[in-house]
Image (tube, rainbow, N blue to C red; front, side):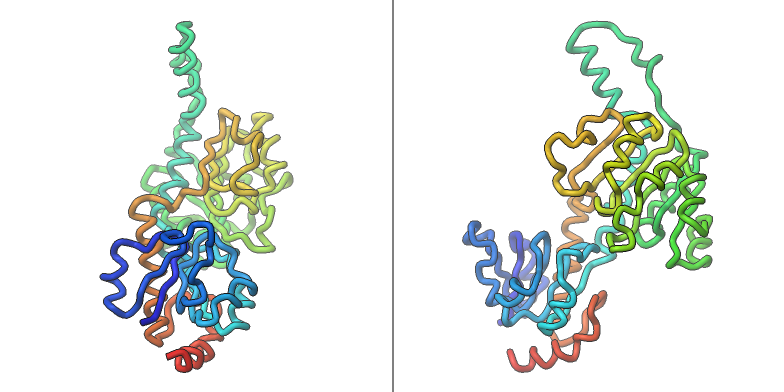
Length: 333
């Protein structure tokens, strides 16, 4: 029987999905101090937070497929996997709704100054000193404002639909999408990032972390944003130069920020973003709703099971390796 290796616990519904075609194995269930325990027996892997490099792949001589439970695959060395004859997939549809809802939650939370007003209420109750909280409360109404999306893929597209229903005007900068997709979503397509930043009351990032997007949002870009704008990032921390974002927030140039990601993760102790009243910071949990977590694992399992049956799975990141995967599978069987 073929074996699928999980970094975390084996899902309770694994047997139903596998239907006798594979066995689930998990180091955390047996030897928590040996994170790669039984990896050498694995035909497929559900990848989470480990780094899948050449050294790790050498410890898995049977491995045919690595399925990343999520969109990002920066923790998987694709060239190394190809050299070892291993297929790599991601699950781009799985985190769409949960991550988009997180972006919208952060957007609304920052606009309504939730963190600061909760602090003011707690202070008043703890000290017993009366305060005119209603009169001093500063918040923004999003309906009628301009949302600028940097990236209009699956997640950005879902944010666009919900934001439009809230009454926001939506524009996007994404050189990889065509006018037809933008029009179908009711989104204005903008031809430069500078223009988008300058026209937007809220800027939300929805691009992958690649060499060309590393520190895409730097001091120059934050200066191009409108004074009093809101900044949202639920993509990857490395897209933002935090040393440029922090002074833009401390000075009041930006109204606030909602961040689900930092660089590094978790943030280092003492990071000023943790203590700013105009920043809501969450620990990379955008996709981790109850439904979202299940969907991530189920989609990854589906891809592994398809590959172990000898069929090419969807969302392969190195499709050129598939003939070699089939050759290796025939030898192992």
